[in-house]
Picture 1 (tube, rainbow, N blue to C red):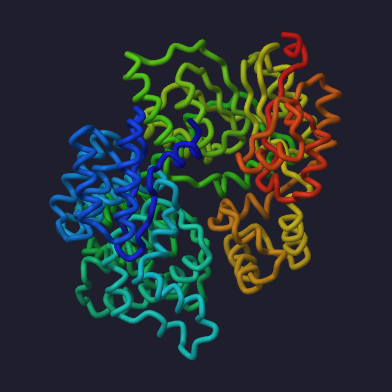
Picture 2 (picture 1 turned 90 degrees about the horizontal axis):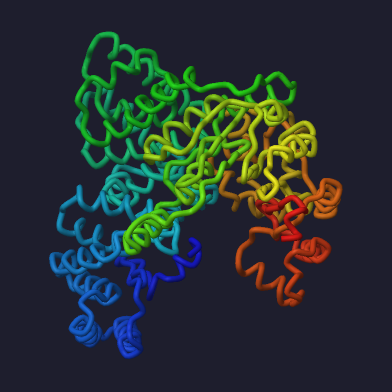
Length: 626
């Protein structure tokens, strides 16, 4: 089952914004009898129409027949939660989670009740699990923006230019205190990049307000509320995850620099350092860049500061130490390859924190357990040509545990990040190495499967790189390729032109300045796609997206010509199911999905079809005879 199909299996996914409750749950493995299904529909309608007692009675009726009916347990939990019976709600949600611990809505719901019971550690654990599982069919940003405390401040930050207040007056102490109490908001900040323009404007102003508060507090040696310290630590973690992409004024930079100097003085003197001072520096500069940062790991810290130090000191130091252990399969001396390598040494990409396969891998393990053991599949040799920070190679390793994977990249910094994440996930079937695709022909190895998505178009000659990979593919193997679309990337190409005309460099300061120019003109239609693109919201993503050393774009006829010239059979594009459905309505022929002429015509009339890239698979043509 695909991720989209799994999400569609979330039953009754009604979200109550004010109550912060998700009234849904994943379907159980076995189908419920028709009468139980009908009863569940009645219960959900009754609850949605305000007849909670009736909904509760129906749920109990269902559970009398099927004690393992997860949706009923979850809805009973929601009903008890709404009535303030949080201990009962926790009991119901816990039973649902015991049946399916991959149900993100249940984790979110139980966290809300734990929070109401002031059992924060349990609330935080389940909030973070819900976020890691993808929040069901929603994004974390949607839940943050539904929070009434946040929503009012987001509105204020978004309208800032129209307000007759100074930036420093936007969030006062009461605003900060109110936001600091929102535990889910802090969990989201600590866990994943929040990709939303309204949230970015809100968080940029909030960080500035916290910096001023930290400065006053540190100078006066005043005590700050623990929730506020936790909030600032969470903001600092978010800034590290997005690589300090938020705009910062000269005054902020100067103030943060003074606090960094103070932190250094305290480190040298062995003086006590408050979590607020630590967070104030970490929200503007990565702590591992501070001299003697390793000594910060020795002291005992409250949880929020300990997590911050793990993220900004312990893990980066681990990666730095690991780089020397990464083997080199080839030299890297091609002029363009060296420049691209330097880019990803400075900004490893993609910056990711959460395993995107948590639900899928969990489902696979449960199916294997139900079947009495892991599914036996023939082992394959897989090459990931351009693995970056390991997100894709770990996906392949976890979904194909029988595979032997070689993952290569130009950047040792990216590879070190990948190796750390691979160890965290307990994955053991990936071999990482530094190599240049252009020289892979010398490694004397072949593969059943080759993956090179989003890589070839950053070579000086993408087709030359593609030709290097072809002899490495075994006769019955498949190759998965991702290439930028000329049509879909028109707005990105326009942005690259603007960057060149105005002389923006690929530095943190210039990337921030360019982003702010786009944000100021966000109502222009030409930037609509850009500001809704995930990679716009972190530094390495924005650099990869718009400031890349080199970028080539393709058309479908160009791809078709290469396939024909090199004896390759097109096996289909990977696209959203809704796009496939629209295509098949236009071209109902069973073989149309494999007709590149049809796809070329479809893209011409639907120019955003391949907004990410052309992502497709091919095989050598001799396979067509089988």
